[in-house]
Image (cartoon, rainbow, N blue to C red):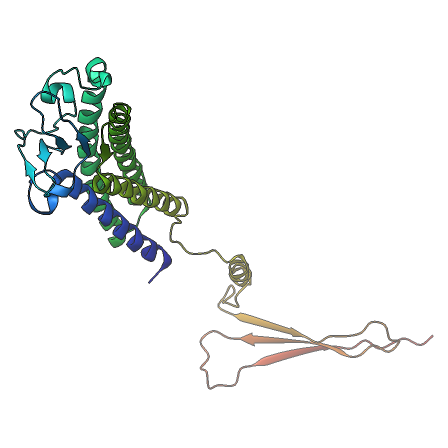
Length: 295
C-alpha cells in the first residue's frame, strides 16, 4: 500500500468517527429513556422557578425534570432546536438569576444558532466523507483540492457550533453558581462535540498536506539518452549514391613525421547495382607511392 493511500485510510477513519459522533449528538434527547437520557447539554437546580422541577436537564428537543433515581419526568413538549432560556421555559421568577431575565436573548439565540451550526456541520461532514471515498478510489488534483476545501468548511461549522454551545452553557453555570445553585455541563455531549472538532482538525491538516504535496504522474526526461539518440540520428547512413552505386572508402593511418613516408593506399570499392550477394564484387585499387627524391 502506498503512503498516500495509507494516509487517506487514516483520514477516512478519523472522518468516519467524527460523523458517528455528530450523528449521536443530533440524536441525543430524541428519547428520555434508555442510554439517550444521559446525553444532555445542561443540568441545574431550578427549585422555586414557578412550576419548574427541582432538578432540570436540557436536551436537544426538550427539557425534563430529573429525579435522584435516575429517571426523566415531567418533560416539556418536543420541538426542534429547543432553546435554553429559563425565562421562556418556566416564566419570570424573582428567584431566577438576573442574567436570565435581563439577557434573555443571549442564551436563547446562542443555543438555537448552535443547533443550526451543528446541522450544517453534519451536512458538510457527509459530503466530505463522500469526497474522501472518491479520493481513495481515484486521487487527482481536483478531488484533492475539493476534499481539502470541504474539510475546512466542515471544521468551521462544527467548531462554531461547539463554541456557541460552550459559551451559552458556561455562562449559565456561572449564573447559577453565583446564586449558590448547583449546575453543570453535560459531560457526554460536550465530550462528543469537542472530540468531533479534534478529529476534524486532524483531517483538515492531513488533507491540506496531501493536496500540497500532490505531483502529477509523468515520464522523466533523460537528457543523456536524448543526446545519444540525436547524435546517432545525425550520423550519415551509407546509402545509394547517384546512379545506384555505393562507394565505400577506407583509408589507412599514416605518419608524416618520418623521412621515408610509408606507402599510402586508398582503396575504393565500387559496387555495381544489381550484383548478386554471392558474386565477387569488382574492386579497383589505386595505389599512390611517395618516393623521396635524393638530391
